Image 1 (tube, helix red, strand yellow):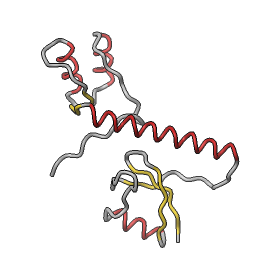
Image 2 (tube, rainbow, N blue to C red):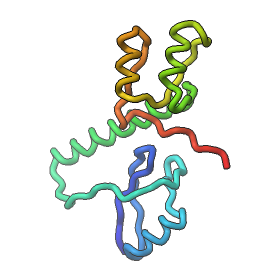
Image 3 (cartoon, one colour):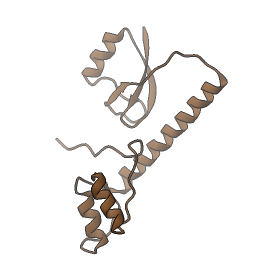
Image 4 (cartoon, one colour):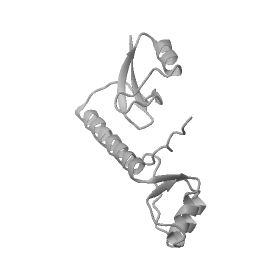
Length: 141
């Protein structure tokens, strides 16, 4: 048996046991490895290091876990309360700023140049670090 530290696309960390490394690979490829926290099937092996436990390493892991949980809450809040506008973010934000569209909470993607221009023009935007940016909603089949 082998134990893997796993992480889903929502940054939930968990462990799972497999009979061998091939068993993990086979199950993951078939979409059978699921996050127990959110049900995501987008799961990968987490970076691992030798387990040398000290009070300092336990404290660091505890802090890292707290940060990951907070980041997950931020991503969930954005997904639940903001409209995803994809690559139209800069245009949508500018249209709302200039009164061509009704103001609402949005998130999406924009280039660094588009973001810089929005900020220079006084459009209220907040670039998010990757750890806080939610994945785009899954497209319906």
